[in-house]
Image 1 (cartoon, rainbow, N blue to C red):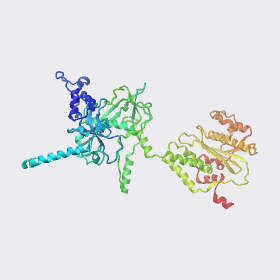
Image 2 (tube, rainbow, N blue to C red):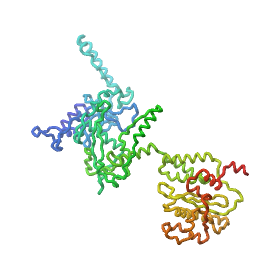
Image 3 (tube, helix red, strand yellow):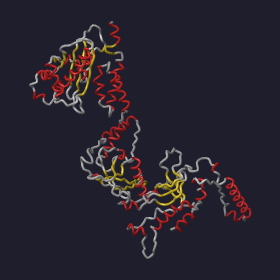
Image 4 (cartoon, rainbow, N blue to C red):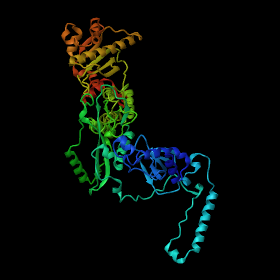
Length: 603
């Protein structure tokens, strides 16, 4: 083994500090070579039970180029780094190379080899490894000059006839690094010469199983590309297998991709999950994903053709790997890529995987959020500004509160509604609350509610407003905490909320020396008034929360007086539902909202 390592180092004049890599490579090669002729089997074949594949072997120490996938490269930056081939990885199917730019030993599968014999030691100066030695540029120039003089001398002594048959020798010399423009580690970007020979870099057969694919270098590279996609997208995490969970199997799918003339241009490997092993309710909840109807696509084509538009079609590479999973899904390690140290570990999926039943829906949700995305920060700033403005504009209270319910996940429709509120405000900039003199200080409250107005959870909205004389001093619009089973219950709960607010106002006015005996609360639902006055109706109110029944105590103590008012005079109606233009304008005027110009003209 030492003899083999010494020979490999001397073949390419490699420095002696690569002796460990040479010994490892020698051991790797011996295990795949015939040790004894009478056995007729290699150690690898005896141990693995199959013949080794030698198609990926390359000369130790030869020049190679490794793909740079870590740095942020520009359009005209070199996509690969020059390196020295040092052997094969023991934990994966990658090559071990010494990167001349980073001065580190790396493992990579994206390597292109130049097996022509060259003096590697001349290119690997000791200074490249931090050993402090460097060759003098003057020595290099003297050596090159001597070579040129000897070549010219031989040329003068040569026979004229032989000079025609043999071209003059090519003289090359190493230039000092100080005279080189650009980085030594980066190559020159030239036009690709492999465009016409693309078929030479793909396999022409489709493997039927993993074993066949692992024996072909092109399919092996394709599988590595697929695994790199998983790593970049952070699709999964290797974890110990939890107890009692359903672990879904994985499988490799191989397909040759052809161009429009039927020529194979790509070997595509896809790792898929065996979704038929999933259990509904455990591994997935919903699997339906909407797709575009063919009629919609034809309508788009007809519209574009009629208007002379251009249509562009795009394809997202590994689209399903972008979808986020809501369930905990575990899959086995891919065949051929198992971790030797953790053979019993499984992968916990963070993203969707081809073959899962919920993968199409996860991708659709991800695409919808990206294509139809609304800035949550902008939406929240707009809602915050409108909520602050409701302190003087009670007529927009209900609309703003409804839009504020969707701050966690706003959609385009919500943004359109908020912009409509701003357009309304831009046309009523001079409007505000008007408090007239001599209006009195009689306290009165209005209470109202809709029924199941929220389409998401079917909860009702309570609305109330309180006046001192004709001056509006308090109002609110709030969704109820529980689902009301009838309009009576919704009105009863809203009346309770109105009573708590009017009591607070009463106690605040005590500090001004004002006392009130019975405070009127106006409600447009007679059944809710009867429930507050008649506690015998137990069958209709037993399911209502006990904290709302304090209204009965207030009525019995003559603190609150519930009165009926027709709906057309219920001013709290503006805080519970959207209204038509005529009733909206009427209630807005009764609340005391008026433009500054009209108030100034009347006074």
